[in-house]
Length: 126
Image 1 (tube, rainbow, N blue to C red):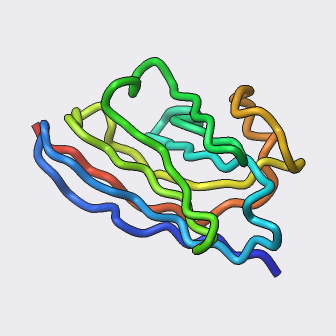
Image 2: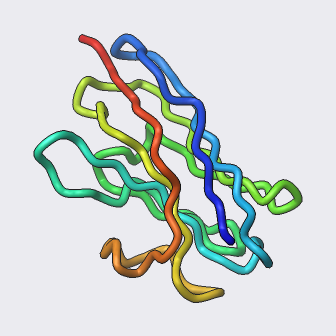
Image 3: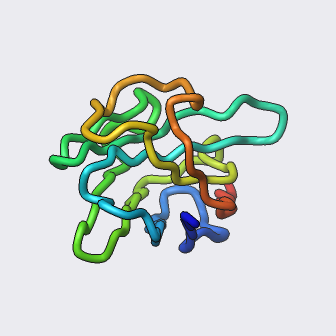
């Protein structure tokens, strides 16, 4: 059974930083594009960032220049470094595995991802 476990969320003031981690039990983890999504209350789930098996990233326009996605294939873990946080970044953040191996990091439809973590809350106060 596949498990994805996010950690690192919390409460931070605007302008602060957080680093999210997603530890997985995905077999052949290095072959898969991984993504970070977020969902704020009353809003649709949106793709924040994704990273290919080769380390190529893709970011939502709203987080470009502030967030950095990375992965450690030796640890089957993906990270999201979030800097210059804004109140509008407040959401539950989820990591997910893209459905096929060796996919691009583009494509924001959540149906492209098949395994999801339980989410971690990020709250940014103004």
